[in-house]
Image 1 (cartoon, helix red, strand yellow):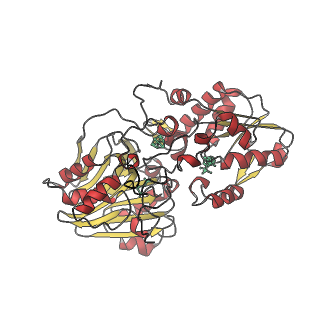
Image 2 (cartoon, rainbow, N blue to C red; image 1 turned 45 degrees about the vertical axis):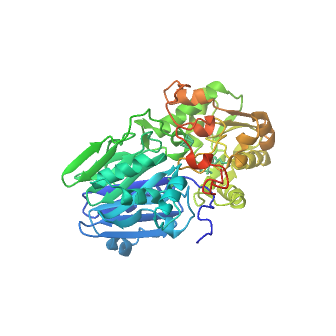
Length: 480
Ligand SMILES: O=P(O)(O)OC[C@H]1O[C@H](OP(=O)(O)OP(=O)(O)O)[C@H](O)[C@@H]1O
Ligand SMILES: NC(=O)CC[C@H](N)C(=O)O
Ligand code: SF4
Ligand SMILES: [Mg+2]
């Protein structure tokens, strides 16, 4: 879909990236890796491979399965090196031209790029690049990296990439294929995750460790914030091309985005979520008969809440496995429909009980409102709600779909007002301090150890595009 204003899109959720070097057939491994990262992006998927002479590419809208499980697609994608991407658009429309990996034939050779994150000065850079004659092929923020690289005056491909990345602001975990090899890079703040693994002689990079597990690769280590790694047949080289700053990895990865069987920053997401639930129980106990998780992502926190409080854990809500995440459906109408299709009360269990529902987060309030009502319809005597993250009051500019502030229920209402709105008997959120504590830290208020901007409003980078006054501020960011 071509739009007159290329940036007039709604924001969505996350992305996942995956890359391999030194495989027999890279495409099969990339397809499997992307499949394990499907929860990070369900709009579109793409793979680019390199066979030592030529690049091969295939991109499609929709899920990984349906495209990358077809032998004839995999066969086309020749070569022992490859990168892949599952997309949730944060900038640019949901259209084929924005599906990653992006690819360009540059003076230095072919260059393919897969990006998880979002650049908060993409529009400003794009305007300048347009003035200098760049002709953009997509409306995604990611493409500015390619134009900055193409026009860089530096000598080597790695220096050109570094030169480009020094000009962007925001979040980027990247995997790139270029003549020099496979490159993996994390922005200086390390906002989005990126890990490295090994499968025999094959080097693997992935957004999450679950994508290593699926192909039987061993986790080696995280790509460090601000680190750029290049892998080729000569081995692996690591660079630190950016000014060192204190890292600010996204706290929400632990709360919701990553799969519970992933290990982030050396810690199990599942164990962290249980610890968050336990902390929540300590901060906001509830004298209920049963603890009921809101599936899927509320489950580990509810287990932690139950274990810490002694209130029995029960599956009082059953979810259908044939409905995707409601958080990432395109419209509010469908979101409501999604919630209805997705969850059903286990009425025989609920009838007559006082229930404490545990969910990981409240964004628009759609899920809480519906499920409190569902519990009442199933005969619950009391319905209490406990949330394993602080109120989400601010939008994310770093690669995650949080709607504009006016749609965030916690930006519009206080806790008591929200409780009234969702018609719960009580409502409590974990504190930001408590969330850090569950992650094993004391929050340093002067210099927080993580990005927690959607709770605190403390953004770790400038928001150059967002801060521009309309009309100069194109609607690239107008949906915030
Ligand atoms: O307040 P809301 O706007 O309803 O959004 C919050 C809900 O969205 C997410 O779940 P989702 O159903 O998307 O996915 P999940 O199955 O992974 O929990 C999140 O876990 C909350 O349950
Ligand atoms: N969620 C993401 O990481 C998206 C990557 C990129 N900003 C895009 O919109 O395509
Ligand atoms: S604003 Fe929130 S979701 Fe976005 S990177 Fe920061 S903590 Fe993560
Ligand atoms: Mg949920």
